Length: 126
Image 1 (cartoon, one colour):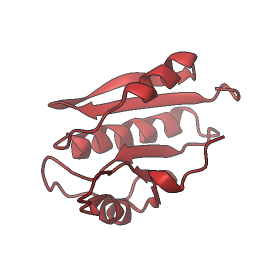
Image 2 (tube, rainbow, N blue to C red):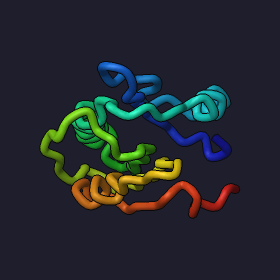
Image 3 (cartoon, one colour):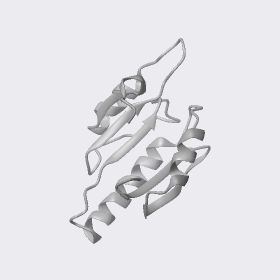
């Protein structure tokens, strides 16, 4: 927000992904929304990643000088095993899996996507 970076936020929950922001400047609303994000498993993450990849590629053609980075918040529990491929920009996958039984699927997902992997507990708050 402080840098007024432009963001695109694609929410993959329920039965299909839904765009919340596409290229707008960061706003305080995003912070409130992030506080409310939950995890329930079975999300349409592969579809969301395909949409995000398409959007990033179009955006890069229209704004070639713009730095792109993708942040994925997930526990790695996908609704299906669709084929996944690396994304068109530097990507950080934050593993939000919690609870006594952890399946470790997010680390494997990060590898498939060519993304940097970080468990949420290792992130420093600023």
